[in-house]
Image (cartoon, rainbow, N blue to C red; front, side, top):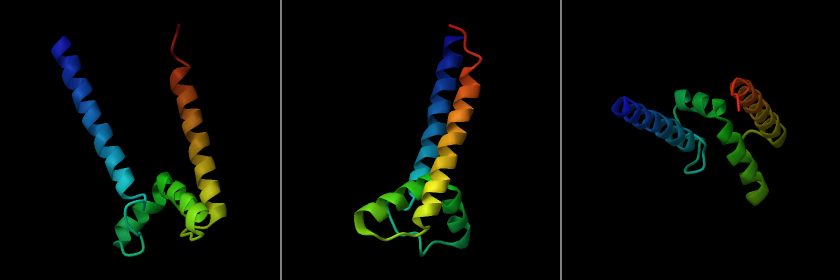
Amino acid sequence: MRISLTKFSTSRAAIIWIGSTSTKLLSGALFQLDHLLKVLMVLTTLDPLSYGVDGLRVALIGATRFGVARDLLVLTFAALATLCLGAWRFSDIEL
């Protein structure tokens, strides 16, 4: 039983690492998003971290890709969706 739980936690960590790394790469923090393939451009618009990086870009250098209003709207929606999902998942826990 202990071995199976260890394998599960290791595979779970690998999946989380793959997801977080791909999100970071598609956020636009490491390189410009203007020269990507069309498929990757669509994926970057679905990534909420892209809008957070864009907001930081506006604050630091005044340049934007999506627009400040769209950045705030997407980040607010992502925060509310995450909050609702967390509240729903943790509602089953008994202390």
